[in-house]
Image (cartoon, rainbow, N blue to C red; front, top):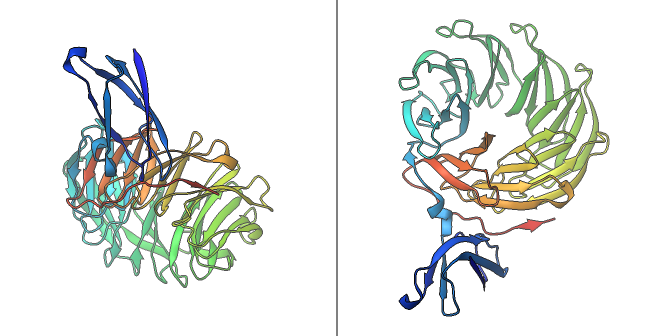
Length: 429
């Protein structure tokens, strides 16, 4: 087995296709591997080729696979704009905007198939699955839609109830659905004990736009643009009430609850730690300034990871809740929408730049392990059993993460008109 090396200077992140030329007298050439296959903006790249039949007269030609088109193994179109995705039992359920719900068989990730679909009356933006029912937050004038998926190939609505605002997201606990209801409509609590006749049993109206929230242990913790963190007692669903609040001094967009702490981000400039051990009297105990445009926060162990749109991924040490500190960041090439952290890696849905995989095992020295440009605009990501499932506007992308330095799209469900973006730079702060 022989090894040769060559050097190039890429101007975008690229996946290489390689052609070897040799006089026929020297016999057949076999290429076993080429490493690395990804380069970064303006940096020289040493590429090693391993194979047989190499000799001094061999000429090596490389050309970039811009957009990672050759990494896409299979695809099938969805008609709408993929907003959210949940995986249950070898099936992917995609909230597909104006096109409702798409049911995709991903038991063979290399060949995903749309096996069922149902066009909801509104705009499917958020979904939760419990047993054989899909609960869909379906936008204006459509509220909550309940879809029976006992036969995934023939999903159908069994019940619905309109909410007063814009149904943005939904969580289900027991026989109640909790709908985040957009502008000035706060939280709507819906009895789903009879899925064919859901009905609103309680509401909390709050001024401003409802962001993301968490439901746990008889409390709902919501982020509201104009009023900050709200703690809502839902022990009596028919009479929910705000029992505590903290003014986050900005437009709160997301909150995550871990134990007796709530971790909130606002779109203006702050990450805040709130002690909720006494939910009636939550206390702001620590904060740190961030760049503008935080979108989502996830907390794993003693680190918080903030997807911060044009600022990429921010890592915050929360081991001392009274003194959180930004200890690292990676400026992703796109617009960081969502982060999923598992096994020392952060998977970032990065808008027009697809999926970014970042090594956060040493938070003070993050390293970009790889990236993959999905065809559309990556909004959400979850990782299950070594596969990343990305809702990217153009549909569902299924990415093999077994080798995170070289992620590959092994299956996809795409719209007809993909976007044209590429991963192109890596920057550390």
